[in-house]
Amino acid sequence: MKIDAIQLRELEMQLVRPFETSFGVTTTRRILLVEVHSEGLVGWGECTAGEHPHFSEECFATAWYMLEQELGPMLLAQAPEHGGDCPKIFSRVRGNRMAKAALENAIWDLEAQREKVSLSALLGGTQDAIPCGVSLGIQKTIPELMKIIETELAAGYRRIKLKCKPGWDIGVFEKVRNHWPGILLSCDANSAYRMRDFAHLAKFDEFNLLMIEQPLWHDDFYFHSMLQKQIQTAICLDESIRNRRDALAAIEMGSCRILNIKLGRVGGFSEAIRVHNVAMERGIPVWCGGMLEAGIGRAHNIAMASLANFTLPGDVSASKRYWKEDIIEPEVTVSKSGEIAVPMAPGRGFAVRTDLVEKLTLRKATVKRTLTA
Ligand code: OSB
Ligand code: MG
Image (cartoon, rainbow, N blue to C red; front, side):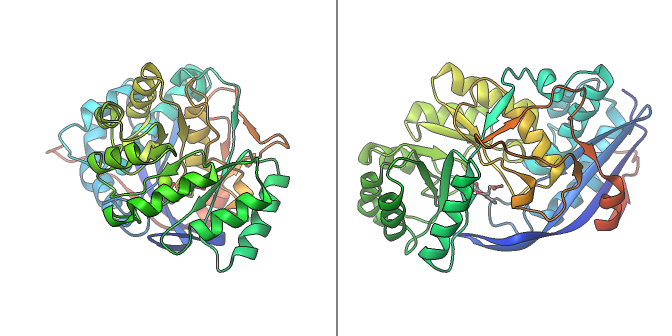
């Protein structure tokens, strides 16, 4: 397809409530959108990099730079036919997977429109609804957390994930489990623990957690495999898994029994499908993670989560949990039974509210064609 233009946008969007993890608090998101114009159609992509390089090495500013100066010019010079052509086009650039994913996903988004098929169908999705959970940040007090859990369960969500860290773990799980003995409950440490904490982490077994997500270093497999041997609770890796090869290594080493797949973290739809497939071959269930996405990223997550091995409730939830107004129409909603319906219409199935996007835009840039790309 001939690419006519690539535009980058920086949006500022206020979360409806702050989100606290073991690595920090987010109150306002800087959302990086890419628009790829081709033959009268517009493919949209959302970069999931954080404001600061706390989840991974990437952040908003590094992604903007890579998109404007490296990846954008490469794509303009190459004219891909399919979203699946992008990894090869970007292969000379090391890392920077969230930046790559924004562009690659925009091409898939465009391709689904051009072929008049749903994005889910284009990806090979087979499920018409995805089961949803919620990820709950660290709160000031346990009673505040209990109130939020009550609200989310009443809304239909099927799994509660608690962000945890030393000092906000066992005491919290105890209260929550006592009150709700039967719910699917998991926790996410975002790398907050170390080897001295192994005995402490073994105590999590008491609470019948569905999984403990990324307890140790963000780039580790080996010590997670040591830990997995010493605890009963399934480990789920998030940060550590950058591609199919990482997933295979982690599975073969016994570093985890469940995988979280995030489009940005693995570099886009192509690699996400590869991670999904290798996990399925090995009998490892996966679920779709979240990065506090606005509507474009959320729509793309829904399409991805329609693949067959996304069997566990993910962190993809309703727009209104994050935003007063989302940038897509309709907003993402969750049914009383805790599911999001996968759109079957051509394309991503959620229209972009371009007027609102324009209103929220702080900065725009058009990628220039360069001779060296
Ligand atoms: O580790 O899953 C994570 C948000 C930002 C960075 C990392 C993570 C998260 C979440 C939120 O858990 C998931 C969501 O609701 O989007
Ligand atoms: Mg996580």
